[in-house]
Image (tube, rainbow, N blue to C red; front, side, top):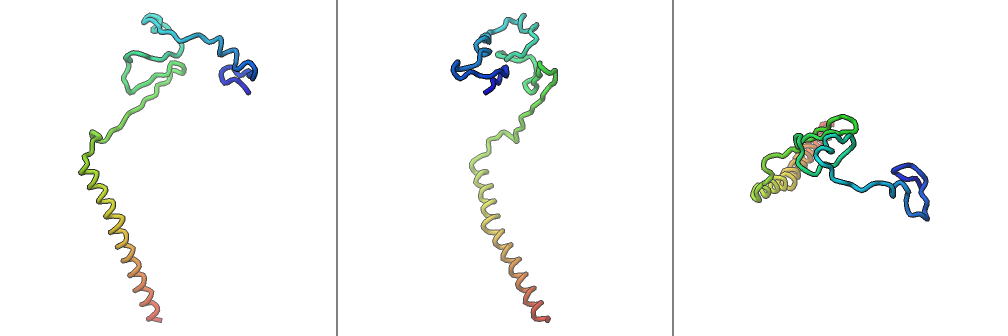
Length: 117
C-alpha cells in the first residue's frame, strides 16, 4: 500500500509512513508572520475579506459561494398544514377525478367507434 502523502511504500510492521513522523505540529502565526507567509493557512480569527469569498492562496483563483434563503425560513404551522392539505387534495381528489374523466371519455369514444362500424 502506498502513502497518500509522499507515495512511498508503507511498511505494515512500522505502523505508518516515516513522512508522517517528520511533520511539524501546527502553530499559531503572529500577525507579521501571517502577512508574509506564502503557504496555505487556516484562518482562526475574523477574515478581512467578505464572508462570501474564499481565495485559494495555492492557485491564486477565487471561489465565490452564496447562501440563498427564501424568506425568513420560518413558515408557520398553519401555512405548512395548508400546503399539505393542497397536495393531499391534488393527489387524492383531483388526480382520481381526472383519471375517471379520461377513462369515461375513452370508453364513450370506443363505444361510439364500435357502433359506427
